Length: 420
Image (cartoon, rainbow, N blue to C red; front, side):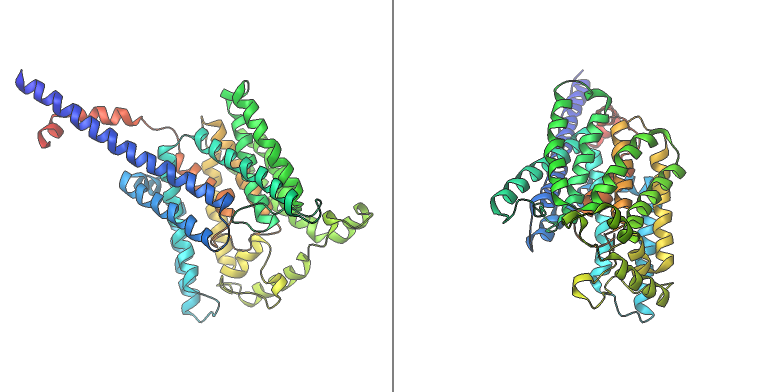
């Protein structure tokens, strides 16, 4: 009897200890995610990178401690193979005499790996709805405050709004607001809140984000978002090929509108305004194609810049990847996206998660039709609208057994009690 009581006491102590440890790790993981999103939407200037790196590194360490890192690597070997290949490819380019490489280029790849572990820890401690609500609420707060600051400080109200936070520019700022709006749409897509207070709240959050997005007058992100949201609804039960086709289609639409910019403006723009301003992309893309022809295999290196200060980089994600990492690097990136598209195409019970992943990916490709020259660079809002959805959705997978079942198994194990 005494032995049985003693074992039960040890079981209770062990269970409490494991729950306490789990609670502390979970709270730290939640805090890291919230700090990351706050830094994206509100940190500005030289302090922003440090404020971003801290929660990412903390989340990665927590993932290693909790075991989420090992599980993420097991789930997504294709992602880690791609990051390893990109690192080797960079090293090969630097070794063979390319001049446009810096140590920070390698650190950027390492940070993406850490960010993947960070997202795995977020997937472990937070539900999909909690993640989406966090992004949507903070994105709406960013939109409201950005509008207030613009109204109070802008010489003319119709000037382009620059959202607060890391972006410091209307275009990446619009990218951050777009993923917050996608999160709000995913919450609406969630079966459980199509009626009631949560639906009303999601719609209320969307209103200031739509207003701020339009006010940025950032044409490519707006077009990309208009393509991404309906496409994500349509692709709900489609396969990987349809997902890839939608991504390439979004990129082609945005890039094509720029290629035919002059005749389109002649038809649409009867007077000069900010919406009809020149994009200056066509000239720089000619330079990019010439640069790719000079270094088609290894690329020119991520640190390469054109001499013109006002237009020093590629202003196109796929062309930029080919220019910086070569056509082989672009092919590897496409293969990685194809694996992720296959991941998205598999049947998922979590409708909101699937919608969030689909819409964010299609939006990212549309956005890359006119910007995001180097998707692997550190750091701007593309970490939130492109990489976080990829890493988070991949790490989430399908629901796993609850943690309390595992704890119950441990507590009922005589061997564990004897070790105690």
